[in-house]
Amino acid sequence: MQNQNRTMGEALLYLTDEQLRQGIEAMFFAYRGFTADPDRILEEKGYGRAHHRAVHFINCAPGTTVNNLLKILGVTKQSLNRVLRTLIEDGLVVVHVGQQDKRERNLFLTDKGRALEQQLSDAQRNRMRAAYRHAGPDAVAGFRTVLEAMMDPEMRRAYLGLRQE
Amino acid sequence: MQNQNRTMGEALLYLTDEQLRQGIEAMFFAYRGFTADPDRILEEKGYGRAHHRAVHFINCAPGTTVNNLLKILGVTKQSLNRVLRTLIEDGLVVVHVGQQDKRERNLFLTDKGRALEQQLSDAQRNRMRAAYRHAGPDAVAGFRTVLEAMMDPEMRRAYLGLRQE
DNA sequence: TTGGAATGTCAACAAGGCTGACATAAAATG
DNA sequence: CATTTTATGTCAGCCTTGTTGACATTCCAA
Image (tube, rainbow over all chains, first blue to last red):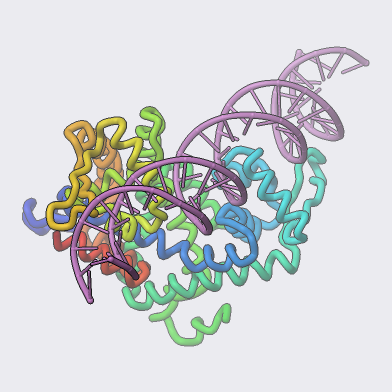
């Protein structure tokens, strides 16, 4: 659609199986890089990626409910609960009973929780920033476009929803 | 830290913390989509992502050694061995003792193994192709550029090495 | 011949997914 | 008011896939 002016042959070269295979491998290796820095920090503190994800999304949407977090993270409540329990015990997350609906628990980061989130996202942003800077703004725009197109529709909604908040 | 980029002009707006945060979340959600289709197929057959990765890279580099695979996958030999054992037992992978160095084991997919690899990569390519087509060739070029820049240097070498073969 | 490299295997453990069952409190509904 | 549904927590147990440590085998190379 972006290159109607080119000939059919040229325009579709980027859709060959070989190009797609390279894209698949690039995703695999890049995701490893993407998680490498936070993983190192987490390991020192005895946490895992599951804790990172929880802390990240609680930070993005303070006061979010457990159910909401479950939808975003796509795990079971038992699995999330195990992670949340340790975060609460360790004083990184606090829980407030919902005001309108007292069944709900609103989740917030403590100062300590925010400090960890900051440390993790600093590390991750540093790598992302270096990659962005190296690639330049046009490449970054393309990167984001492809990533959004690769998401499941529900996840894309969740993702775009987070951007609005 | 948060806003030091703002003052540097519009050219660097794509490097703001907010833009980077969105990129981080996009990676998270996109990777979920990226693995969703193969995961469904694997689950039916009683395999996991570890099996997918092994099958994928054995297919890309037939005759590769266990040690080589360990480096690419970044896991321990014990962990890989457990996966390889089931793949060999199930007749998806065959092992040939090395010709020059008989300590080495060269790994190959059987027809059955290739069939599974095909099924998995078809599913993954279909999603990737849809995303690529939707985004267009320029976006795809940017996507690839950013992903490469995000890899660890050793992984980038492994990745570029695979492309040459 | 001996050291070290490549590989395999056994055992044990942990993280973090999962399911199922059950408890509680509160909201919603009839 | 009684019942059902919803939101959450918790316990027990299972699976995959990662880890470490120990030990055996095979075989190249100094």
